[in-house]
Amino acid sequence: MNWEQYINNEQINKSIHKVTDALSKLNRTEVAGIAVGSLAVYYIANTFAFDPLRSIPGPLAAKLSRFYDLKTKAGGKKPEIIEELHQKYGDVVRIGPNHVSIRDPNAVKQIYGTERFLKSDFYDVFKIDGNESIFSTKSSMNHGRFRRIMGPGFSQSTLDNLEDIFMDNGILLFLDKLDKNVADKNMPANLFNEFHLLAFDVLGELAFGKSFDMVKMNSHPFTSWLKARSSIIPLLTTFPMLNKYPMLVRNFFPKANEALGKIKEFSHGTLEERAADNTTNRRDFAHILVEARNSNKKGVCLTEGECAMASVVLTIAGTDTTSNTMTFTAYLLGKNPHVEEKLYQELVKAMPSRDSVLKYKDARKESLPYLWAVIMEVTRMMPVVPVGMPRVCPKGGEVIAGKYIPEGTIVEVPVWSIHYHPDIFEDPYTFRPERWLEHGADELTKYNIAFSTGPRMCAGKNLAMMEMTLVLAHLYRRFDVKLAKPNEELQLSAQFITKPTDGQMNVVIRSRKD
Ligand code: HEM
Image (cartoon, rainbow, N blue to C red; front, top):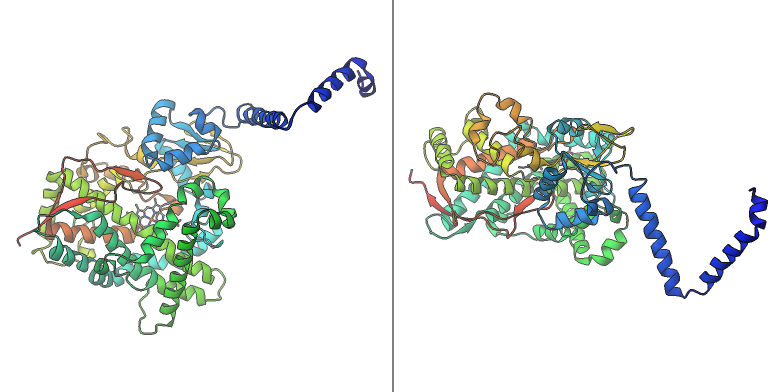
């Protein structure tokens, strides 16, 4: 039948009339119902029949909507949920409509080892007013520019030059405060909070050029602004397109928006002060950022917005990560007193008295191997970023863990699952720092991905290791630190980073006698 015959066919015309007649008799609600139903049919057909990820197993809810991801994040148990999914469905699991988790140790290098798999839109939440940062940028070129400018600030030689500053203005104040207010009082003290205050003071010195003075004052509004802003992060990382409509965030989350305004104002103001201060020439981040802002050399300059943003991002990236890891160290040492004792014996040899001050060059792996192994084991068992870091599968797609993953799919390797992978770590649920000092440990270090790996790995690893090593060496030499409730498990909540659910990790501290 050709078109003309088709249009003139009486039988067909009768049927069309019947349908239009029936439709014209429908009321508005019925029309809306049919429209919604048709959309649903279209959505389901699209999801199931034309779905490029249909061969990847996973829960139906994850396949249908990103709300599944939001739910796992909001509950704070994403690492455990993802591990359960892998146990059930295998190494490649669908965790969102366009999102796949891959629990294969070889995928770590494949996905994170180069910049072929770029960061996903998840990171847009870390942009402020469209300003990118070393952490948020997806572009390799832009990332190269940030690394060129900020690299010197992360180098060990710069940090060695600044060691006295953060020792005197941070770590020693923290130890003296514990001596004065906590030690031998037989009262529980929230070490999680004390580490948090200290980490902010160290980063304040480096990123803004002055301490937040939180060890002394116990608080600073900057942290409450960060907290207010971070309340909307799970939502904005799950639905990154919302970042494109700042009006929505402004109207629906006024508190988070107001907090962001204050953060920006603080950062601009503090860096202005630093730029005007010609009494110091220390080469901390604040100096490096102000210099880049004043430069007009292509490739090594920052805009005013990028400069202010950089200090904020450094503070976000470098505070809770370090302080929570120190909290987890105190927790695991408290749970394993034989390890604490062995550590103490190593420290006593390196530091003759409880008040000895050790330089970092004498506290590194070569000098204090057991302390280094403790940190490696803590970052394995309680990685502060336990979830996968989302990347976009490149053009042409890629075979990962034996499955073809189409281009544009968001992929991630769950850090927690790799750290507990029984094929890599023997007896993974046992806290055993010795594993990092035994034969074959070099191979193991490849699979401790707490700082990630490749070009987008943690830029602040030197600083983090230096800060944690110095704090823990001095803390455990000076004090005997015991858990206030040694039989209780620390309850954790994992968003992008993990923290104690109730913001507490209580210890009882006694002074070492000599
Ligand atoms: C125990 C402490 C720390 C841990 C476990 C840690 C972990 C990580 C991880 C896993 C990433 C990769 C994130 C991703 O790809 O989504 C990262 C990136 C980053 N971290 Fe850290 N971090 C720590 C401390 C620090 C410190 C002290 C700083 C310094 C301010 C810092 C600055 C950064 C920066 C700038 C990036 C982005 C690097 C880039 O993309 O080039 N981090 N960190």
